[in-house]
Length: 179
Image 1 (cartoon, rainbow, N blue to C red):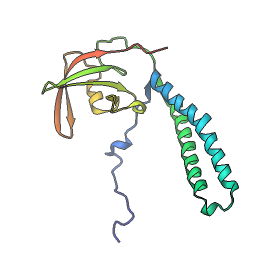
Image 2 (image 1 turned 60 degrees about the vertical axis):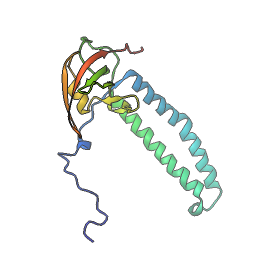
Image 3 (image 1 turned 120 degrees about the horizontal axis):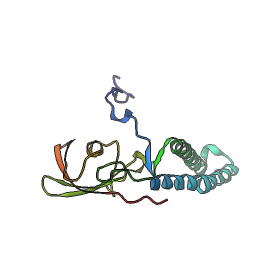
Image 4 (image 1 turned 135 degrees about the vertical axis):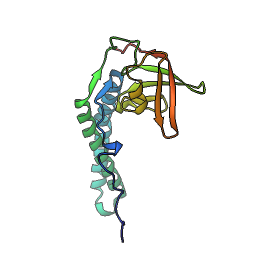
């Protein structure tokens, strides 16, 4: 029975999931997280509590699938509320432009061109705001770390699973954050 019911062991010193996350977020990202927290606290949790109460009133809880499902969902929502509350307390909101907008810093929209001439438009945001569909990458990502402090027309080499890729920075843009 060697290895049964065992998870894969990872060396904590080399596990990328153990690396500390940066605690920065844009003002828009913080507002979005506060909106999610507000929705969960004011709408979702009371609705689920009502459903659990109604299901519990029906009697035998051991065979009540509605009670079991809603109770699990309520516990998931409560855990998410707890996580968001704690996370919002420890985040530092970056709500102003950097002094030198000619260089890549947190919150920058960056246009890159690879060796094949293909362009890639990304934005450097906090860990809690990453979105692959919008090409928003975490400030902790290897590409973002390589870009920080660079200027237009600088070359950046990043190691990817497919090998090393070199990008040319073609544009840097900062959009003034809303107050």
